[in-house]
Image 1 (tube, helix red, strand yellow):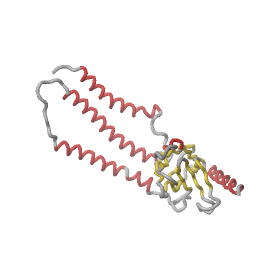
Image 2 (cartoon, one colour):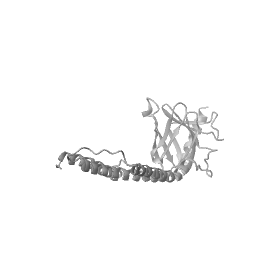
Image 3 (tube, rainbow, N blue to C red):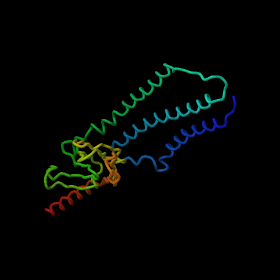
Image 4 (spheres, rainbow, N blue to C red):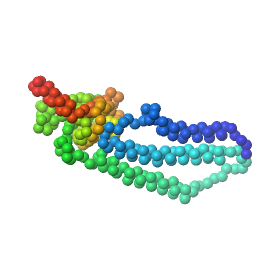
Length: 259
């Protein structure tokens, strides 16, 4: 067998892939390219689920790359003789099918708590519930509209407050709203809340979150919805409860003044 410098170079090149990949993830937070700060009550559960999947995929990725480097060094050597032909290994095929199946079952059970919290366990003891939502959010090409009900809680009539792009909600309050689309598929995405929900034409989808920190957070459409998709960006302003009440009262005064 002859020493092949090119083979060693290729093996080292493939070995750099998992090394750089792991290093990137380890230092991503320090570089400021990791997830933004969590500011919702259920955001931690979403991050936990992400980390579970990340570790599973990461370990599999590193292991696969190590095996690839070993195969390059082991089976690309110059040697005499004809190639060896094989029709596979049934035991090995069963193993590499069974392991992903077990991992998928593990992920399925791991996500049940987060899925239940975000999609099923809607607040029922606060000011906003499925029966008394705080607002309706309407997505359309290429804007966001929030509709706050009149003082009787009705969403139809002349005293409904409509605001575009800038949505106001109180901090430390479970906010329930109905998400609608007036044209095509959109997606309501606020990274800091770990909230992403498709807006489907013809459907009124209940959504909830509870923000834990005041501030203004980007509202992004995470579904390609047409030529102006790039500019469909709004803001969710999380303010103190009294500030929210004052903002809502001022909006009502402006509405009545225009009557």
